[in-house]
Image 1 (cartoon, one colour):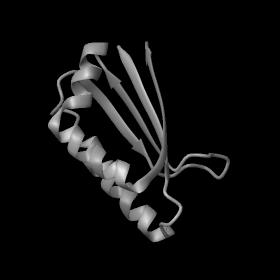
Image 2 (cartoon, rainbow, N blue to C red):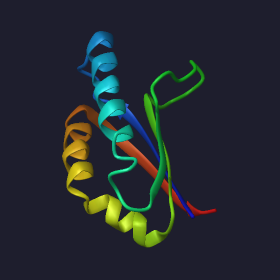
Image 3 (cartoon, rainbow, N blue to C red):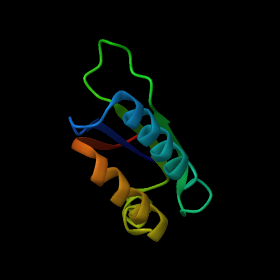
Length: 99
């Protein structure tokens, strides 16, 4: 099993209302990938960080293998969702690890 964790920060120019709308779109598009992408067993988007956090949105996903992660990264539905994410996010941190 593989964990795939990402933390993003929105670009500075967005208002709180825009950030909330974008976060909900990201959540709905990415969480819908479970059941569509082979080997993706779980995916949660966290959009309500505590004030002690330094990230705006977090992806927490579990895949069956490294090969499943590689397939997820090129899956057309993921590629489409990721294009929107990249358009509104200023930076990204990622950690993948085996569990």
